[in-house]
Length: 88
Image (cartoon, rainbow, N blue to C red; front, side, top):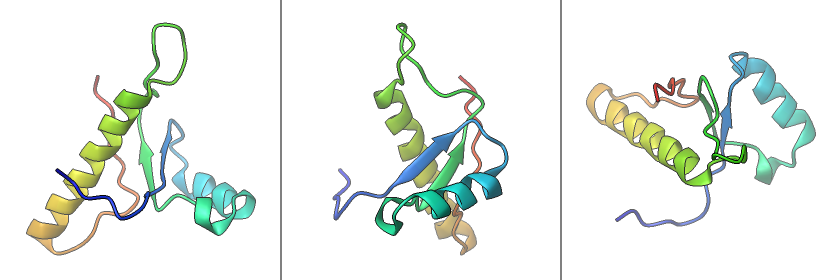
């Protein structure tokens, strides 16, 4: 079980222009709302009624964080702004 010491803001986006997404977030959002990580997916997970599938999105973010942690453990550098493609 993962202990949470606070919320980490992660932005899930379909945009491939991560620099632009980051710039917009920095211009528009207060610092405490700005994402610490950006995750690109081919398609945002949606429910059958067309609403965002929050549980699936949380699963994708958790997977990206774990992959970044393992990458850092094995290769000694951190993957921030991980670009993982949703294959489902």
